[in-house]
Length: 181
Image (cartoon, rainbow, N blue to C red; front, side, top):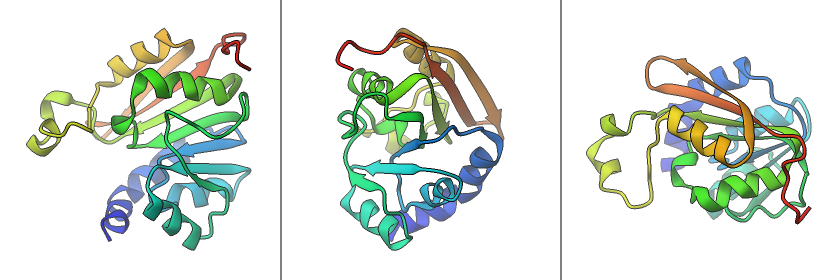
């Protein structure tokens, strides 16, 4: 029930991102929620999705998404260099970045693209319930860009819309993959 409500709330944001950002295929969506964005992505090419929530996986499958697995951003169950892009809608604030960013870089092809879509981008303006949460961390787009750069991403770009919303895109540097490839 909560997932469906959240999906409705985020639908216009997801549509804006998908209509305005070039997404290379094959693509992996991390944090698929109800599968709305993954279903749209699947209509244009090979799209896969992961989510830590069993309920999200079930809802996405009901929506017709077939390439979905229960997994986290910190342990992506795909071989190295499997994807041309990785996209995430509002799940970045739940990740353990010291593990997830290198893991994303691992599954991206050389020159692959990460797309991080955020509806909340100002840590100081976060509601009190987020500030009290030990699982949600709101980061500014500039802070995220610095993290991505420190993990071998380049060509970082921030696009903003309606104040707090942002889309961050970056490319994995050619030849920057881990030796575990």
